[in-house]
Length: 327
Ligand SMILES: Nc1ncnc2c1ncn2[C@@H]1O[C@H](COP(=O)(O)OP(=O)(O)OP(=O)(O)O)[C@@H](O)[C@H]1O
Image (cartoon, rainbow, N blue to C red; front, side, top):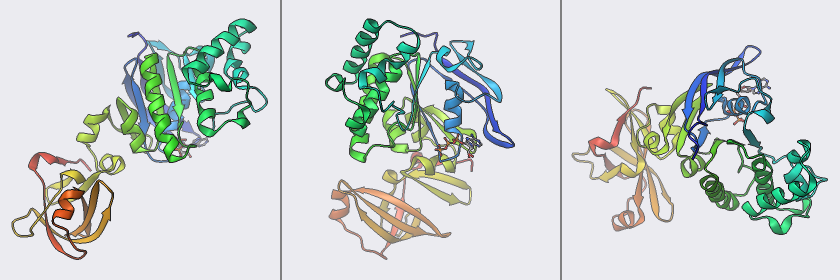
């Protein structure tokens, strides 16, 4: 695996007029990482991706690839390739012609173009559809073509802007596995923008959680999920309760929350909602201070001792399951 192709964002900044969309963010992505930029709408993730791609100018700071400043290079000279949300396929070109398009622009001869496009279509399992037009393909198939088209340039980094958002939930999960497989096979860095925490958790080796134009927390996916530093990160990643205590806010995962008898419990609550989720049952309880917490119980445990709406319960957690939050 090449080690000289790390991607570094150094105080990277984007302003649109007076609006600050990306506020001096810095991060180092090791080569070969599957990284997700995660955050709510408007937090600056697409602007960051577009600055890496060269589709948006850099207001301040820089983008380094393998130590080389690529901030001012044209997109085609950066070693990056971008796959867009709407795939942006040319409707009047066949699948093969779409995939081979960038090679044609570079003046590569027809025979080489056809053979390279063939290899790429094989990689994404679309060889059988080579002669079709984009309109004759399903959403998932169009996405595979868009991937092949991006990968034919042999990028060092593939940039993906909400690549799965146009797909139905079933296909989204299938294509998610495909993206992961491709990244593993190719060994290149994937930088994937999403606002879906499930998608980020499923795919990313590293997640970068953005909020208000800044990086709120970043690192190996599991370490961020296991120890969110702020209330925003805990809430955005989901599956966490944020509880205000006199000593400051803490996060406790809903699967670490235990339901006991009220006497002697850390907290007392009253059940306000019971949601059956198949393998689990989610119990929501109102606690002091107008707060709610959720406990996720394995179905066997819940149905072994079912609870009723309105019932008073005790809520407990192991000390190591609580993480102090900074805000
Ligand atoms: N071309 C533009 N001109 C002016 N403002 C822009 C432009 N593009 C983005 N913005 C603003 O910059 C901020 C960040 O936008 P950006 O698209 O990077 O966010 P995002 O996190 O990718 O959001 P989304 O998930 O909705 O795409 C937003 O407030 C947005 O309105």
